[in-house]
Amino acid sequence: MSFMQKLEAAWQTGNSLVCVGLDPDLSRFPEAFARTPDAIFAFNKAIIDATHDLVCAYKPQIAYFAAVSAEEQLEKTIDYIKTNYPRVPVILDAKRGDIGSTAEMYAAEAFSRYNADAVTVNPYMGYDSAEPFLKHRDRGVIFLCRTSNSGAADFQDLDAGGAPLYERVAALIAGQWNANNNCLLVVGATWPSQMAKIRSIAGDMPFLVPGVGAQGGDVEQLVKAGQTAAGTGLVISSSRAILYASGGSDFADAARKATVQLRDAINHIRKGSGR
Amino acid sequence: MSFMQKLEAAWQTGNSLVCVGLDPDLSRFPEAFARTPDAIFAFNKAIIDATHDLVCAYKPQIAYFAAVSAEEQLEKTIDYIKTNYPRVPVILDAKRGDIGSTAEMYAAEAFSRYNADAVTVNPYMGYDSAEPFLKHRDRGVIFLCRTSNSGAADFQDLDAGGAPLYERVAALIAGQWNANNNCLLVVGATWPSQMAKIRSIAGDMPFLVPGVGAQGGDVEQLVKAGQTAAGTGLVISSSRAILYASGGSDFADAARKATVQLRDAINHIRKGSGR
Image (tube, rainbow over all chains, first blue to last red; front, side):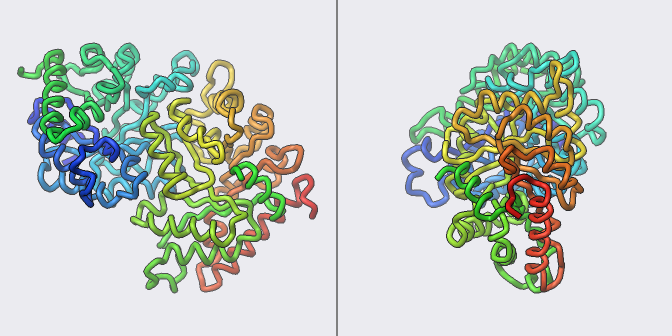
């Protein structure tokens, strides 16, 4: 099953557009993990077990593993999801991008070593930097378009021949890079009007939407701006607001509650959620 | 000593603008390495021992390590350079870029875990994605500007309010992001006229220049376009043409010869090389 099929099925079976971002920050873990050898994997496992039926995807952020030499725990985390909850696709958030020969190695990192279903990629270097990812037809390639952070405006909003750069990025990807129907776009929750514009350019292409929760994006506005006619098309990612909903021993229960809350808030707005 | 001071000193002591890119591709290693357990480190060590007096920097490309779970060999490679040839700065080629909280983790990966003197960064997400790197005043932050690959034109050349995007990138970095004097730009060897324009925008800011060797950039044109008044300002990186100059047991000698050749070709053109 391709990533796109898996995502479509996950939206339906879970009746959810929520993606839990796995940004394991040791300094924010509950006390009990301080003396656990594989603390990151143990924490992720508890979060996954508590939320798997509520999500359409998991999104481990590789930087949180790489900073502390925990690649093996990233491998274990992804393997745990694939073994125990195979319906849930895994997005490796890595924002890679390099010349073709190097991009081949990054694609091997994401798709072979970590066996991710999809990976985030930075489009700045152009088509030949994307092609080594795109040729994996069964995997998703999620390009930065209009990101959620304040600095996004520095370059993404520059007028590029009559339209802001991020619209040019969306148009080129939707029009030319998506021949294998395996492209998605990162569109920050914090910019609903830009999201509506990108939706009009990109058809039903799914958006990965960071920026709800800790970053303050408004759920109602983003769902109205970004949903497709089917009431899907969005992978709405929350990390810190779910992972660290409680810093105590009830962190997994608190994470479940925060995920239910976000799922319901989204379903309350979107079309066809069957709520 | 800051990265910038270390680079300036390395240009002088080695009388060289050459950077050897460490892109260790197991499939291209000489036969003898097939049965070595730490093949990547052993190969890198041989290349480093054969070229250390001829270079102004080494540039390990992290993708070649990550694709084959060889992070430990990357650590050992950098540690080997720092212990044995401390005059030579190490640039980690990683092209990272993410929102601030994640960029903090990537900065920890590059500067704490790997102890690199400098790292390459993708500017697409804007200032707050760069700041966690920039605040390390003693390290170098090398932003993609006009890259060497053919796809670079897709977005970098778009007219962004009267100037191509890459010029806007160069101007913002030179004008605003370089408050700690620790920024550099990636400017491909394959585009000498663009390089000359970027030099006129960026003052004496050093350029990391990939694209000679396997990618075909012309040395004479790029040096004339990119050198500063002092005849430096360039870190000219060659990877495959040096590492795989010979596929036989003489690979280290062949790498040395290829490095000497590139160094001399550059010094023949540039000002003040004392040749």
